[in-house]
Image (cartoon, rainbow, N blue to C red; front, side, top):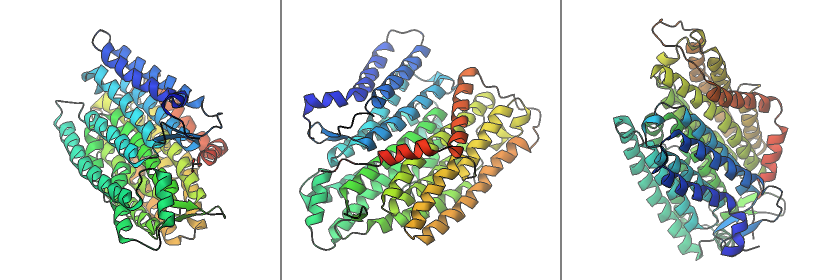
Length: 493
């Protein structure tokens, strides 16, 4: 079903809520004296948008919207929910962040909502032009959010590096997209699929186009060798922004990546198996990126003393894990990525929430700030942090273990044994640097000069919810995997 502009508005309510809220926040900032109300307004806007997204779940009518520029299907709805939850948690953290209190509140929250709106478009784009515009929209707002702390040299440097790397990656990607348009004569994913299916044999031009486009997507998900921006940006940005980028931006990158490579450059055979079109074996390229990303990310994390920078390299490694699901090019691999996106949201947002609590109390983001955390009033945050870190490492019975189990199961079922071996070895390596933080919190004795770490009811509620979900989904994950299975469906016609 292909809907025009007017008919499409019925499916466009979540985007309208976010767009209207951005304008409302900017205007309210001119008149509201209590700036904390702007954050609560942004929180309410995201919650309302999430409700509007969830209300579309029972709707079985999948459709192309605005003359095939975007789409409404289970895959899009799944990622909209993830983006809404990531934005909600980031705004919640921002309300308690000492860093965020020093910035212009209206602009800050408007930028977060605008970035979330761009992520919605990244998940729903079915056209090369729309995909590029959505990615650029998210990128530009991310550059500004990274440099929100205007008088912080580290933040300014991170924002500038992000802008430079992002500009190069975007230029490379759109150049590759222009080649695909030249080869197929269309920017619509379905048209690209049909054009490649009609082509005979392999094509060097198509190989170059895919490689260039993959560079842009690789930048967005922070995969090696397009990862150089991540450590500096994660370190320099305010902690809530870092959490938002590490989960929301990465999930948006994977949403764009999966929709482009599955229904765009692959075909679903009668046997239910996907196969690449055009004679270009791009899954082999993704396989290589996966192995290099997880290896470089984990090895680099071993050397870090700043927790935010350590989690940045950890994020690069986890991009490598998720790319394993794409490399096998199967429904099982797709389902495993969607499941992992959910559990990664829980454990990574949770870890950054604890980092923010420590930074608020001590002004430090390194191992020294975590030394003896469990013995200086931070026993509950220390236990929660340990749960998040062990989940990131893939230790049972945490949700991260189940996420990696499904990823490795898909890889082994596809008989990619070398990839599974590399992934397993990297999981073992990652346990070392995660355990370093746990050791600092529980086994290292405080010097006595560190201030106590306190957690108010607001942050306590967020941390409790994330911790509980991380443990519960490690023990009973059937609802999440069923949701991922139902959401691994594209509208293809």
